[in-house]
Length: 409
Image 1 (tube, helix red, strand yellow):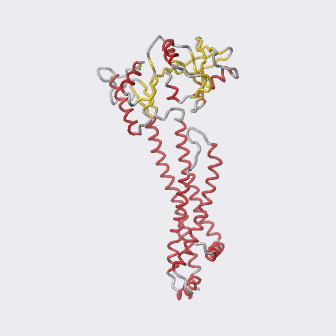
Image 2 (image 1 turned 45 degrees about the horizontal axis):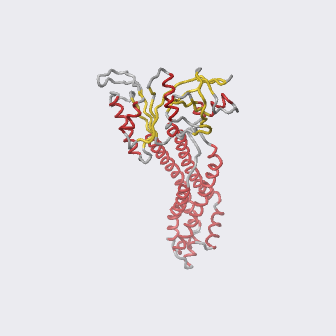
Image 3 (image 1 turned 30 degrees about the vertical axis):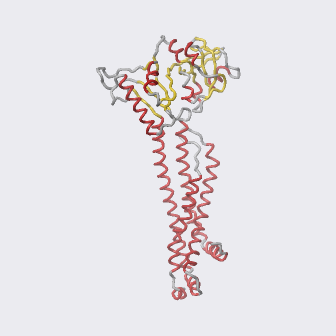
């Protein structure tokens, strides 16, 4: 394989067919370039999808109520379903093995005032476990605890953007802010990996806001996480059981998709995986078709090369060259052109992804990249493709009869 004379002949052959070699080599390089970029783009889309859910626990389930669309169990349609505090205990008792963390959520809006600064923000009144479900990062102070719930304390954990709006560079911890005219003490500041809008919100104890708004036990929805050891099948089974249980509890038709809705992240991740698998398959097919076009071109080059060197090959065989030596010469030239062209395409694709990829961060597309297995697979494809591209011309060269070759002009 490392015979110096053979490689000199390969270089000589390429120099004599510069334009043809460049054009067909370009086809192979372009095929690998497109293949890698397509697969990286699919990964970028997948990263973008996951980035949208990055600010919540991946094993999260959200139970939401609405208005029924079907009459059921003696109740008319258009009945509003209202969750209450005891639904939380009901879930805990009904699914002790499935449940990890759970919190009720109550939504409100507030006009916040600190000294001369004011702003309008959304408030989520929650329970302590919601910090884990939402993956909220408290950078200063603390989160809501059980004592805040029991005492119905007027305390708040504000987002980073809220802190900047109201306090600027002043320390906010321990200060009192008016929420719709009521004083709340700031106990913590949080950041959120989701987006800046999430940091323009405020967390407060659930019991406090229920007390403020009519001493009610109403809640808007329920957030929970299931056993993190569950696979997709078990996760979906749990959310289905949870939905069926709540529909029976509130007398909602099993076919009614509006009265009670259970949204499971596992289902979203499953849909994303299926979608990206299809995109991956399309990318591979398109890239391979382009690559095949280049391989066919290299095969044609080798056919012309063999034809142009018919007399030379005949002389070699007349002097005792074995068919295997002729085959090796042709195939090595084919593999060399294919591999060099492909590696150049691979290199340029890698350079572009290394420079541009890390700077792309959006909800729909983030950090397009390819892993080592993709690069390794592309390398194997190149070598195998080179062998196949040169195989037929090599066999043709090996079958040339010396007497016929010597007559060739």
